Length: 228
Picture 1 (cartoon, rainbow, N blue to C red):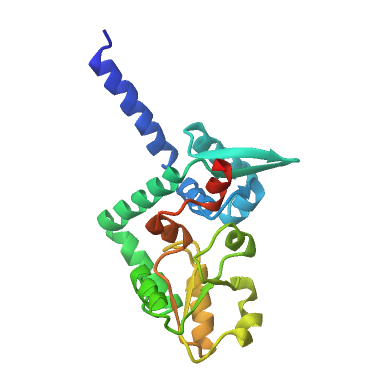
Picture 2: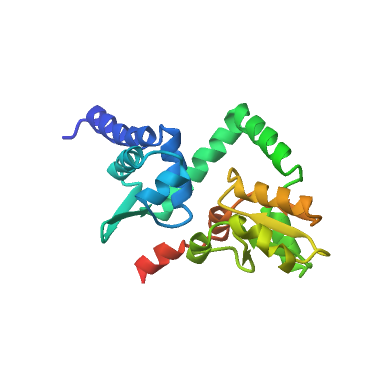
């Protein structure tokens, strides 16, 4: 007969392995970046401002508990989230931190207040405006490759790096809502700052593409491809 105490120690020990794998800020940020689509180790290292060696070690820890998966393309190692459940787990972790650690809200308020200074638009408000066919332009300021991996329907890709040269093509008489990777992504705030400085009525979406995915119940493009 299986001993109950031994069973519980074993299974809760494995649960703790997942928590331990997420016990580093860089590893949590890697999950955030991979929620946008698969990336090479070198790309991920640039995104999280870490060396390739350290990034590779962090990815190995995440892979060790099945949070990320890897494929080889030539000499490149390409990583992705192992399952949509990983994104939901990450979002749950963020929600608990937001609810229980006051410093999260304080840091966000100070940063976004200083950078864009505009009230963020909720996902519900965006949906209402789009359903009402309001004259609103939704721009996705992530890099082209992330937009191509998946985006909010109706959004136009205007990567932050190219925003200045694309200003002439944006309407000045209708609201612009910018979004990027998620609620703590800084690209949308930087875009809104630039747009408002140029006289555009712009605001940041409170959430990003992965949050829209979760709220809509849609599967990431990469996951749909693997299932077909």
